[in-house]
Amino acid sequence: GAVVSQHPSWVICKSGTSVKIECRSLDFQATTMFWYRQFPKQSLMLMATSNEGSKATYEQGVEKDKFLINHASLTLSTLTVTSAHPEDSSFYICSAIDPGLPYEQYFGPGTRLTVT
Amino acid sequence: AQSVTQPDIHITVSEGASLELRCNYSYGATPYLFWYVQSPGQGLQLLLKYFSGDTLVQGIKGFEAEFKRSQSSFNLRKPSVHWSDAAEYFCAVGPLGGNLIFGKGTKLSVKP
Image 1 (tube, each protein chain N blue to C red):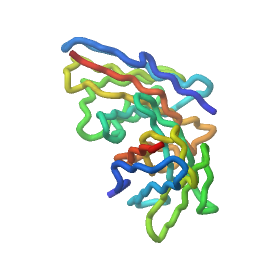
Image 2 (image 1 turned 45 degrees about the vertical axis):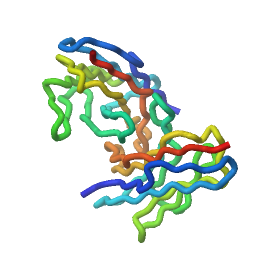
Image 3 (image 1 turned 90 degrees about the vertical axis):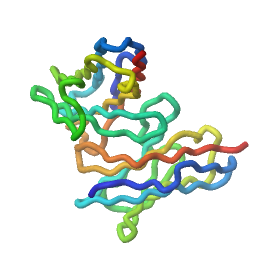
Image 4 (image 1 turned 180 degrees about the vertical axis):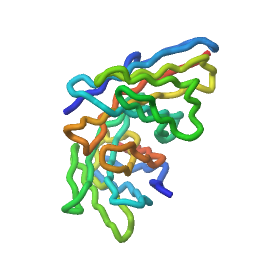
């Protein structure tokens, strides 16, 4: 099956700094990727839809200037958490749609972000 | 409004016993339905999906789910649970090729 990777798998950063999370589709080209956020013992909440070559579409309540998404190529989308605060600590999961197989999303393993 | 409800937050079953996890959805269009499993600190693994056709779908690891349109349900079942099935299970609904709406999840614990 298709594989989606995320890097890093976990990261600790200090308040006020920025951190970048990468999401890669390893064996297919993904025109669409999604970024989800999962709080402890909670469900996944969609943050934004990332489309290659265009601006991301953010869900209501998600600050686009704080969570910068760049989908620069068909295999890479990045999420940058700018000026991170402790409340940004969460589990971030990306997923990608294989346009040849649009019936399911392939999820990355997630990135655990801890802001101290 | 589009939503997915998993009424059971936590279920405990004995190893070897049968399992049913409930999922109800509210969706305006033709629903594409999914069940995912998540182990602690891990991403999501697709167990099975339903798009059309036979309402009883088979998945990996011995899981199956039945789509009942009249009840807006897509319950997950397994006839005999193994200790390795202990995890968090998420039901999701979405359009073809679009983002998914997830339920809050059901945590499954397995007693030896």
